[in-house]
Length: 393
Image (cartoon, rainbow, N blue to C red; front, side):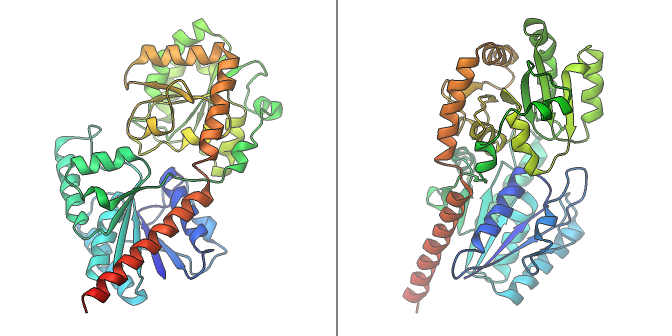
């Protein structure tokens, strides 16, 4: 069985880490040949391309596959992808992300690929964008759905949103949680040396936020409640993991509020550094308004860290209210404040929720479990396709 994955960019991010983990895991399965095609990975978000540096033939770049809408380059990318598929003749094309999801599926259909799968890592339409973009993306997704054999969703919430938009039918959707290597997170520890290197004292209570420094990720909301939080609990320190175009604005805002010294901006860190940073944290706050299932939340739970999370998309499928953290209605800053304070002040509660979260994630989010479920899906779809072909003869 030959499988080709396609993704728009291989930057440092949840969807990209999921895809890399899937490709590397699937190549170890008997009878599977797998490769990955990506558009160029440029910009401040970093790149996961070096993972494939010593794995020749496993990864290639399609220069015309770019993230912004560009009719000429999009047409070229469609033609080149179709040409690639006709040459390599994969049994399955498995796409990820918005642009690659549309162009990759249409190209696979042109090349008569028998099975076309698309993973929905997060919504490509919704209240986070304007009317015209929403209309365009919904139409594009409905069009691509006509040639899609099956959808993989990282949360049932994604299936519900796409079905409500008239994209596919329920039988086409399978939830497979976005797995990751659990051990580094399960083994994460509160290292005083690492704390000290970041200017964090041993008795500071660290509120960690892992997200690109960009709009819709919730940093403005955190800054809005931070002064009141610090008046109520001066030991708090905010650890912002990630980088992006809004960093200077957030740093300036913290300075204007007179609380800059209570914020630590790590900048972009490699994926391997996330677990140690969670290890020195006491709780996670995740206020993004656009996620399929926020990867940072199960990672924090694996490290034994409870979370305060906006109830968006698939968040409630991993942040269980009162069991692994607190779910907050988006925009309810009073509840964000109260949730952070309750966890900051009650160490036994943090420990109890963190332990429950660790067991929840251990049972559901391992990389091996994810790869096994994808592999089994491939086998089921291949068997069904073979039966259909045989019946049509």
